[in-house]
Image 1 (cartoon, rainbow, N blue to C red):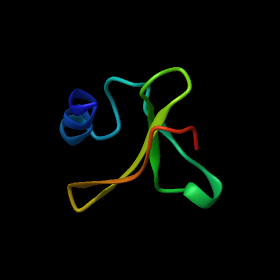
Image 2: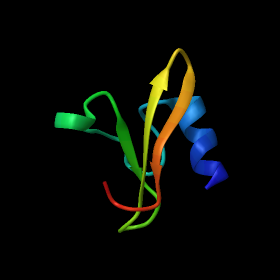
Image 3: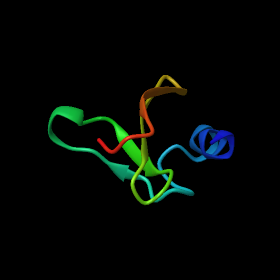
Image 4: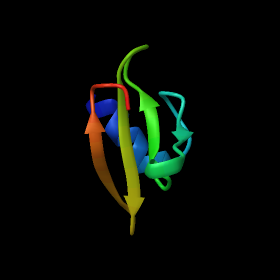
Length: 58
């Protein structure tokens, strides 16, 4: 998990976990795969990573 968060801090919208922009009510947020079923949902705000959801599928 720490490796994934560090990669988000470094690469923002590219890298491990297959980053995907979210749409509709989650527009502006991105998701990355933790496992096949679980995701991390995050947003970059002024170079800070804001984690909105961790673990379950959005």
